[in-house]
Image (cartoon, rainbow, N blue to C red; front, side, top):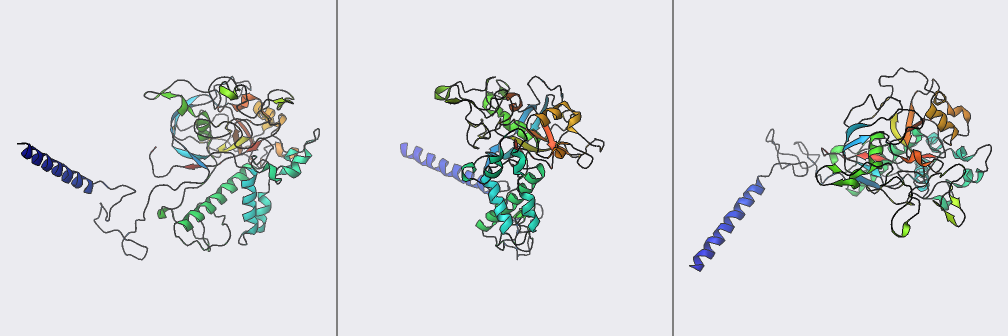
Amino acid sequence: MKKRIHILQGASYLLAGMMLFSACSKQKPTSVNPGSKSTATGLEYGQSEGDEGFVVNEYKGQPPAPGMIYIEGGRTVLGSSEEDVMYARDNVERTVTIQSFFMDETEIANIHWLEYMHYLKTDSAQDPGIWERARPDTTVWVKELSFNDPYRDHYLRYPGFRYYPVVGVSWNQANDYCRWRTSVVNQKLAEDAGFSTGGGGAPAAAGGAAPAGGERIPLESGVVVPDYRLPSEAEWEYAAQALIGTQYNDENQTHKRLYPWDGHAVRNPYGKAMGTMLANFKRGRGDYAGIAGKLNDGAMITAQVYEYPPNDFGLYNMAGNVNEWVLDVYRPLSFQDFEDLNPMRRNEYRDEVKPYDPKNSLIGQFTMSKGATNADPRSMSLGAENVHPRVYKGGSWADTPYWCSPGNRRFWAQDSSSSTIGFRCAMIQAGRNY
């Protein structure tokens, strides 16, 4: 009797295994496993570029992008939860959804910018003027009533400042860097995957790896990453909030955050680090770092890009250190005219083309008087030749904690630079619906 039971059990296991194998063999095609022929025409897919059939390259998912952290998207409430001391009313709360994306773990540092300038200078295919246009404006440190002159000569190039955030870079220059980074990263990925890119210097063509002759490694290859770019204002604010750390149970969040960390204080309330500052900012008038022997944040100007604890997404210095350029053009009614999925304010959308001068705005007047200024006073005005002021966010070493709140926003001319503004890059998560 027992022998018969064992035989029946064995037969049932065999049948279950056959059914499982049959089910597996009839799996629906996916992007990673598209099958050998088209489900629409029945035609066989080609195996290489020389084949007559439509070639479907092997794909294992979006390749890892150097320096990037994955930011899982979702619903959030954008806007300032701080008291609107500037009476700007330019970031009223609204509910939106942000697609998942990637963002740089840190701000772009001096060493990254020097690497960029090195390849621009050594690439014989480049216009020699590109290198000159990429040079940061080191005179942003110089002011008439202070002696910050040593930073003009040392901050960018001295080895001790390698991992401090690059400053003196305009919005336009930051975008140029994003295009260059896309090109060189994709060239490296393509070469690692066996694609021939022609070698030579680091190309600077936008939108992908550019081999000799200006060709681009096609997106269909599956071996390159999407474009590096500046984050949208919505992406930046969502990433800074990092509310993934406040979730519990089913789509519940315990609280919103005033800063990229919990609580209303700017000091660490826990453990051995209790009492230390959580960001690099200006504590008050004339107080950039505290007193000797007990400096409150240890940085009278910028700090190293890994200096303070990361937020719950793993991003460093999303408050303080340097403000950061974002993609959006500034308009005070961006909170009113917006899409609720991946909002971004584009150039001149529903705006009359006219000079947009920060001197006519309370928030602009504050920006001009509190450090986000260029040595050249002519760059402080957004005249008729520049109607695209760009948003920057996050607060800096020269700002009080008010500006460290993710919802607060300011603007500056896209071709101007400051000792308090830097940037980091972002990238879409391609091939997924969340």
